[in-house]
Every structure is written in structure tokens, then in C-alpha cells.
Image 1 (cartoon, rainbow, N blue to C red):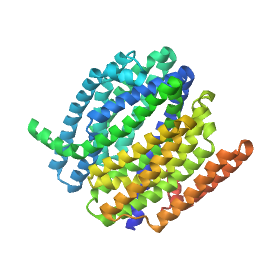
Image 2: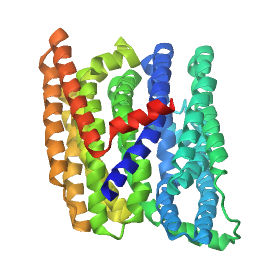
Image 3: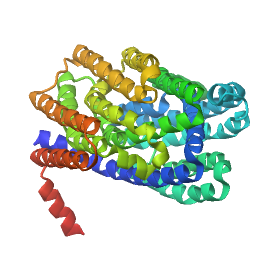
Image 4: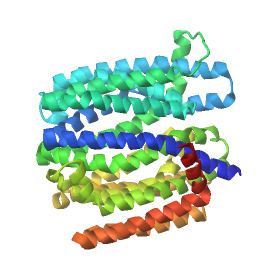
Length: 492
């Protein structure tokens, strides 16, 4: 019964937040299509560089609070001590203001350098300075959402995200039609304001016991919170810097249109699978943090999460590989055909990411930041080295091959780390699922490499249908899907 309850909790949280991700995906699909048509590859590239620039500075100045604070709030909530919970929340709310202001000032200070490195000259330095206000907005909204996640207020968190997405889309998309390229900066800022409003509105519905904290207490309490956050900053910086270097490398070799091709491929590869993993991880990390001192429970929970992740994401990966050309043409246009070859490789890499993803949280739940940094350094170094070595022959396609190399090496080393920290190992059921989905994904990849036309799509559809049927069978075995369907139908 306890095992069934655990699976049910995983699927319930995934269902709620998965719905949010579906809304996010649908909105991004329409928005990407509009931007691709109105602005073309150049516009997509400019937007990507603006966002990557802001994300890079935010990673440096945010101290990882939007992630590390989830762990601290979850642990405080587990004690049942209202004073400790309130103290943690107040410290978080004060620190996100500090980190947001620091990030904004750093962006303005280095705007010229950032413009030269990302765009090749200082033409965009003024734009980067204006966009810097987003760092303050996202820092505050990130702290509010972290509060809801740490307390596992999944429904409130889902509402905040959905309203932010929908209202942001309705308000900002018309600006691209009216202003064209000039709408890029206003859209980024307005989106940040809307997301901040809804995250604040719903987080305020959580009752927090009034508590007085001095400046010294706030500072010292925040230092404890950012101890893990510091390592998260380093790892996020490594990842963002890696993507930044790759985008700049492509810009120098292929121009802004090449960056647009890469950005389109990277967005599609991360949009769907990351949506699944984020939906599950939102509830998974607080649960894992709550049992971080009990190795047996950690091993059980990680294997359960691995099984569910494979069952849900397996058909997605197979479908994306099989119909990737249609996806690119629908979401963007025929001008983005170069992204297809890269994506075929990247989608294979996402399967490895699904396998390693649940294990990686062991390191974070244990608070072993140095190990987490080491793992990320190795993975990103492999990615950059592979892109550089293969670029002269494969060009954009090299990025997809590098993504596989990175995730393969990361899976191996994170498994070793998990084994050392808590004696982790995959159960026979997890191994069985890895082998089955691995074979089908390999067949799907070979199909798109060697077949064309009707044969390609016929085989692709067959593989997708078989994988989806197997996943439904597997999910029904661990939780009564038919019963859930009947309850939903009766309510409707």
C-alpha cells in the first residue's frame, strides 16, 4: 500500500504540473511559430542571445536560491515548527531582493562586454542594460515559486504558472505583429512583470507566522541557505557558459542565421522532455530531501521515479525522433531544415538524460555540492570538446552528437556517485525498462537515418504506437488508470 501510495503521489504531481507544462508547450509552439514567421532565423537568434545573456548573469548573481531554498523550506516544513518555517521563508524573501538587485547592476556594468561577446559589437549594449531589470523580476518570482514548491503547494504553484503563461502570451504576442524586431525587449520585460505578479499573488495565500528578524539574522540565515546554492550557481554558470560559448562559436562561424538554427533545435529538444522532467522534479526533490538521511528510502524513491520517468518519456522520445522533420516545419518553417539533423542526435541524448536525471538529485538532496560541480564540469567539458572536434566535418550536426557524448559520460559518473553516497543501484525492473526503451529508440534513430517517405513514417508510427501501448500497460500496472479515468469521467 505504501509503494502504491508513493507511485500515486509521483503521478498525481506529474499530472498537475504536467498539465501546466502542456499549456506552456502549446503557448511556446504558437509563440515560436509567430516569431519564426515574422522575424525569421535572425530574430530567433537575437532573442536567444538576449535570454542566454540574462540567464548567464542571473546564474552568477542568484546564489542558486530558487533551488537550494526548496530544500531548506522542505526540511523546515518536515519539522512541523511554524517558527522555523516562517524564519526560512522571511530569509528567502529578503535575499531574493538582494540577489536581483546585484544581478541587475552587474548586467548594466558589463553590458558593453556582453554585447561584444554575444553579438560581435556594442550595438546591443543598451538593449542588454534595459533587459537587466528582468533579473530583479525573475529573482523575486523565483523565490515565491520556490516557497510554494518547498511547501509542496503544487496546486497553487500550478495556478501561478498557468496564469502567468496565458496572460503573458495574450499581452505580448501582438507586440511582435505591430513592432517586429523592436518588440523583443518590451516582450521580455513585460513577460517578467506578469510572471512576478501571479507568483506573488498565489504565494501570499500561504499563511506565514509573523516573525521579526534583524539584518544580521537575515544575513547569517541566508548564508546557510546559499551554502548549497553556491555550488548550484557554479554548476548553472558552467552550463550557461557552455551554451553561451557554443552560440558565440556558431555565430562567428555561421552568423546569426546559424545561431537561429541551433536555437530552434535546442529549444525543441529541451521543450518537450524538460517539460516532463520539470513536472516530476517539482515534487520529487522536496520528497527526496525529506528522506535524505535514510539511504534505503532514497534508493527506493529514485528507482520509482526512474520507472515513471521512462514510462512517460519513452513514447515522447520515440515520437520526436520519428517525426522530427514535421515537428520542425510545423513549429518553425522550412527555413530551419538544418536543425533537423542535429535534433535527431539530440533526442537520443535525451533518453540518457532521463536515465541519469533521477540519480542526480541524490547528490543535491545529500547537500554534496562539490560532487555536483564536478559532475557538471565533466559533462560540459565533454560537450564543448566534442563540438570543437567534430565541427569541421559535421557543422551544426556536431552539437547533437556532442549532446549524446555529454549525457553518456554523465550517466556513468552520476551512477557511480549515487552508489558511493547511498549504495544506489537500479532494480531489475528499472534495468528492464532501460533496455526495452533503449532498443526501440535505437530502432527509431536508424529508421530516420536510412529510410525516407512513406516507409519512414510507417515504421516510425509503428514504433511510437508500440512504445505508447507498452507505457500505458506499465503505468496501469502500478496505478489503476482505468479507475482514475472512471472517476474523472463521472466528475465530468
